[in-house]
Length: 279
Ligand code: SAH
Image 1 (cartoon, protein in one colour):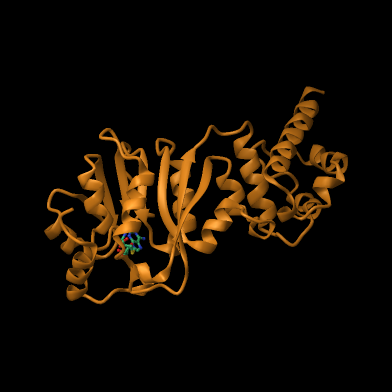
Image 2: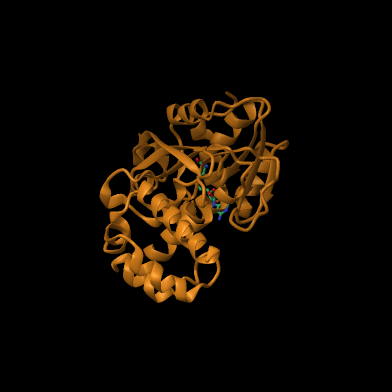
């Protein structure tokens, strides 16, 4: 290993103090960096995207693996530091949420800025050639993604399950970072899975009903008039559909339904839709 993590972090921090608004908490624990790399199971053929490389503590390990590495970093001073430390790194100075990620990337490995965790997961999901990711996130966010307990049920986690197998790996305490964050962190592994039938409709159902998560599904759907569905508007059929559905779905609030319930629900809607258009 060429540079100890602490040296890279110190060299960057000599140029400018960390900006907490940009989630700048840098990893200084070599053991955690090793486990991120071990979980990533890198191959020479991989093209990895690192989001927010910061001082480059993970970047140098990714580059040493022999995989192709691209990185996107929002902070100009950090980009200058990275260009000096890693002249061969393919680095883009931009907001990772706006940046058009290279089409060749097949995996993401990153200790990401926590404040953009949700939109990053959403963006990753739409880049279908990304097959896996190893990311560090806030502990609480990891449980929402994994739907660990009933109270972790949320739109983000439920929708993520349509595209990803999610596994929680090592828990990481604040003192493994400099400066220390106030929260615990967790390494999370995501592996792409085949999309279920009616993927788009299930996503819409979940996102639409969770937008009013305290309301019964019946009330939210009744008001929608079926317009939010990718099937298109079908007002009359929609009213009869609402009446025909079993109460187990319609009387529930979104967080009371599990993943399989949403899939069954979408299948029933599609069956009803086909009955309507066949008449
Ligand atoms: N991966 C490094 C740094 C983590 S801190 C490490 O483990 O030490 C998060 C990094 O993400 C910082 O360098 C911050 O400047 C960068 N960042 C924050 N918001 C970003 C965004 N929207 N796009 C790209 N990089 C971002």
